[in-house]
Length: 401
Image (cartoon, rainbow, N blue to C red; front, side):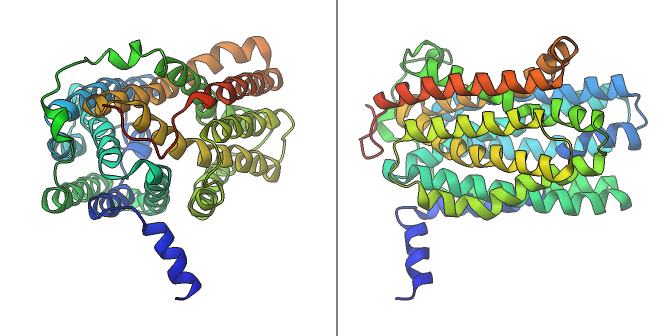
C-alpha cells in the first residue's frame, strides 16, 4: 500500500457514510455562502441605505442567529437532527431569496432576522449528528475535517462572490439559496436520523440545562472570553491597521491569510496533535490566540500583521475541533443538541460583544494597551483550561447515559 493510500485510510478511518455526506454537502453549501459576508455592502451599495440603518439591519442577522441557535439545539433533541437540519435549510433558502427581492426597509429587516434565525438553527443539529454517528475516539478528527471544509468553502465563496457582485447582486442570493437546497437534498437522500433510540423518549432537561451544568459552565465561560478576543479581528484589528496607515486592501490580505492557513494546515495539525491531552491543546490554543493578538501592539507593516494573524490562526485551528469534541463528550445523548446550542451561543455573544467592548475600551486604553489586555486574558484562560482539562473524560470513554 502506498504512503498516500495509508494516509487516506488514516483520514477516513472510523468516519461513517453519513458524516461524509454531510461533509460534502457542507463544502458545497459553504462554497455558495455569498450573502452574509457581503450583506452590509449589499444594503449600502445596492439598496442605498445609510450606514446607521444598514448597520441596524445587519445586526438583526446576529439577533436572529441567537434565537435560532438555541431553538435549533432544542428541536434537534425533540424532533431529531435530520428534521431540524432540513427545516433550517429549506427555510433559509426561502428567506435568502426573500432578502434578494426585498425592497422596503421593513422587508429587508424581516428577511434578515429570519435568515439569521434559520441559518444558525442548522449548526447545533449538524454538530449533534456528527457526535451521534462518529465514535468518541474519532470526533476530534471529524470536527477538524468539518471545520476544514467550511473554511475551504468560504475561501472559494469570498473569491467568487466578489466577482459575482460586480455583475449581479441577485445572483448571489440565487446561488446561495441553490447551494443550500443542494445540501438539504443530500441530507434528505443519504443522511438517516441519528438521534439515539433511548434518547428519543428521554424528556429530562430543558434548554437551560447546559447553563446549570457545573462542569460545562467553566467551559462555556472560557470560550466566551476567547471569542471576545478572537472577534477583535473584525473590529479592533482593522481600526488598528487604519491608524497605522494601512488600507482596506491590506486588511483583506491579512484575513485571507487566516483562511489560507486553515485550509493548508488543518489536516496536518490534526494528525500531529493526535493523542495530546485536550486540556493541553486548549491551553496551547488560548496561548497562541493571546500571543497573536498581543503582538499586534508591535505590528505596523503588512508582513508583521500577517505574522500575527498566522499565530492566532494556529490557535483557531486547535481550539475549533477540540472544543466541538469536548461538547460532544460532556453532553448526554438526549441533550446533545441543546449543549451544542449553548456552545454556539458563546460565539454569537462573542461576535456581538467584541465590537462593543473594543469601541468602549479603545478611547480609554489606546490600541497597544488593549492588545496587551487581550494577551493577559488569554493567558489566564489558558491556565484555567490546563487545570480544568485534567478532569476531562478520555476520548475513548463511552457516552454518558
